[in-house]
Length: 175
Image (cartoon, rainbow, N blue to C red; front, side, top):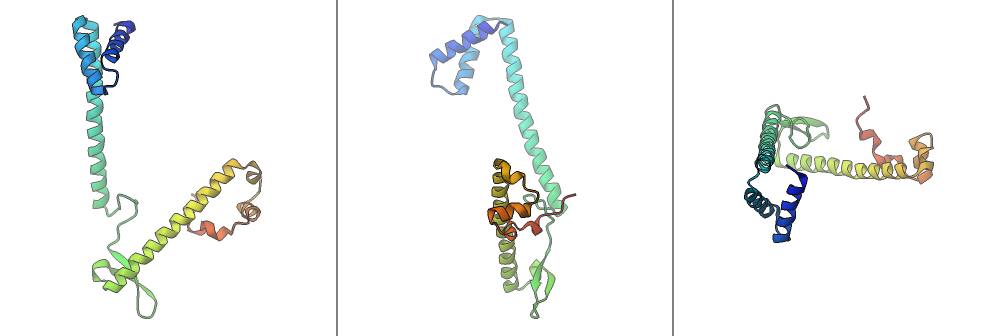
């Protein structure tokens, strides 16, 4: 089928329905193409339809596999959102101040509240230090003079930035 014929039909569709959506344009294209009674146009439309439906089926398959993956992770005790192991226990403080692991359901309400807020503080602290590290990384990428400095400590000194605010000790070690 010639590209001119496809483009001509598309131009006619746009002329008839300039502000329509894709569904209306597609339906009108099929209607106008049927008037031409050209087997090549029909074959082309069929192949486009098959490709679109195949894409839809692939989307369903991908969603289904993602759901199955999440179910497998949960069955193995891994959080879907963080990828960390889901632990049935938590760390609580005993009356002497030492930490002890107990099952969540066996913790006192006060221990539960303390553990939840402690974990939230850790997560919030990581988010803050990650934001600072990202800002520093962006600054380094844009400033060639800073990139020439031999160490990150030199960069921090140049910027009068306390290295502890980067919380670099919380980063996992590189492999």
